[in-house]
Length: 220
Ligand SMILES: [Mg+2]
Ligand SMILES: [Zn+2]
Image (cartoon, rainbow, N blue to C red; front, side, top):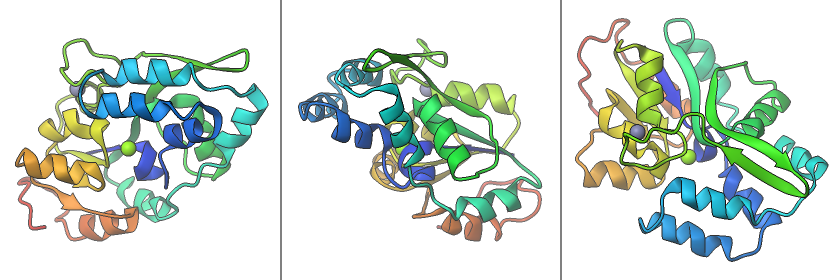
């Protein structure tokens, strides 16, 4: 059993990248965001343009990453599921920001798959170690590919997410926990899903599952 956990808006209370842009970039970052949401540019093109707009020094950004608020109910969730499942954080955000935020909150050390952040003078840049040209979603991190590699085909793969970057895996995951815009996506595409707000909700549901899940019947 593998839990693929999204970071921004799922493990973190707010979207880190949006919050960073709000604080350190020209307000026109929102127009670029809209172009991505409307499907005119890919997530990679969107982030490339947006990150160039970030104007802040290294120390200021590190302090910002430390201020990222996480969902504390993840801790009892992780304590329970780590007895029988693999858990990985898979995010189309920035790896270093996630590492710093999780370390600062004294969260367990989990495998993190995200875009690679590089500091440049007075700003940041990024590279894409988990990009997949074969996936139509055009994300920096292809969650369907990462999940496939991590699970080695073993089932079930369980996605916990909230947004557009979770869409490619929502199609192939065995079980989906959704909040935010991912709910609408699942409804539009007839993908069965459980709605959640925090990891406390996810834990409550997981505890109702039989020890060995052989059929992924959903009763949301
Ligand atoms: Mg998210
Ligand atoms: Zn994909």
